[in-house]
Amino acid sequence: MENIRHIPPLATQNLARLSARSSSESPEEAEKDRKLRKSCADFEALFISYIFQTMRRTVPESAYMGRMPGKDTYTMIMDHKLSEDLARRGGIGLQKVLYEQLKQRPQGAQKPGEAAGTEADAAAKKTLKTD
Image (cartoon, rainbow, N blue to C red; front, side, top):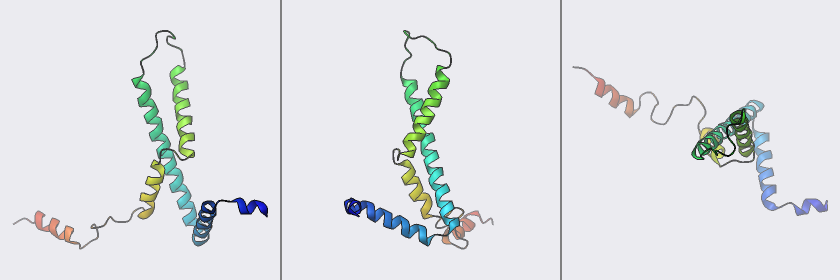
């Protein structure tokens, strides 16, 4: 019981929020949320990998080492695994921003102002009207 007293308050607040969220969601919603988080993390890993690839192009090749067979493949695999690990550990914050933005509006939902019968539709019909 002594170990419980040493848990920082912020950690207990986060645990309480997570448990409240998981108990209120259906299993389908929890699965969708897990897939969305994974997709955001995968996108960030891809983005970080592209950044590594672009940064490597700026470094001139050394004449000292020469051309080694398989070096490009090894470098590509290493960059990919490093970017996946970096994204899994929290990354550069892109996955959090993506998740928050995509979580706000369900997929397939209409954007504000796109509902049928709005002023934007009326203005578009008026503009396209032929005499």
